[in-house]
Length: 230
Ligand SMILES: Nc1ncnc2c1ncn2[C@@H]1O[C@H](COP(=O)(O)OP(=O)(O)OP(=O)(O)O)[C@@H](O)[C@H]1O
Ligand SMILES: [Mg+2]
View 1 (cartoon, rainbow, N blue to C red):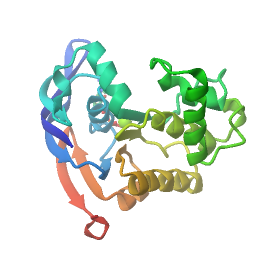
View 2 (cartoon, rainbow, N blue to C red):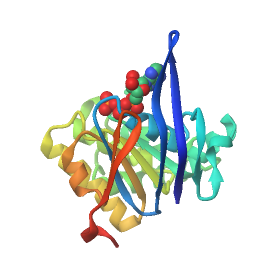
View 3 (spheres, rainbow, N blue to C red):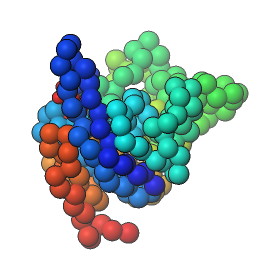
View 4 (cartoon, rainbow, N blue to C red):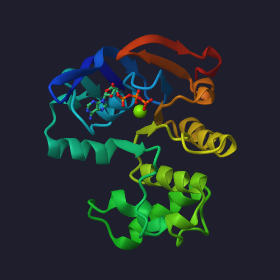
């Protein structure tokens, strides 16, 4: 369960302050699939990075599984991310000089685990995203959709309960984007992972169980597709 309480986020831009989030509150049940939508600059990425513990809010609190992550110091926050959150970014952020399987293994490195075991776990998720046989390739040898699948595998490798995806289909053609989307929907359905996707893509809005729309740093609508309630 993720509880977001009156979250505000200000950025300093030179001498002016930008209020990116102006008091956002809502909760996300475990196993939900939420599309965060709204115009460019409305605060989607900001909110995603706060929920994932990549950044700190100016005020308010985010409570995840009864832990107030807004109060954690940097070290504890890193521990929280490792244990609970997986990120998928628009630009994939793969390391170009590492192979597919090495990229996927990266989040396991801080954990004391035998290399062979890391490899086995990484191959398991690589299979899940349908990239077995490509594990020795470099990211540059893969298509955009395949690279995004590697990024999703990497986000899954530490078995996070929460997957945060920022415009995961943004740079992909519509067919490839639809495949990525179905992969995420499948993970939500079969493995009950909580998935939060920041997006402009209306197709995601249609496939998600819940759609939260932000406008200028505030929630302006929150709708659920009743037929998808499980
Ligand atoms: N590091 C930063 N420093 C200053 N201002 C920032 C920073 N990051 C974001 N902002 C500002 O905060 C507001 C919200 O930005 P955010 O990136 O969350 O929007 P978004 O909804 O993800 O937009 P997009 O759809 O274009 O990705 C914007 O006005 C943006 O310019
Ligand atoms: Mg964004």
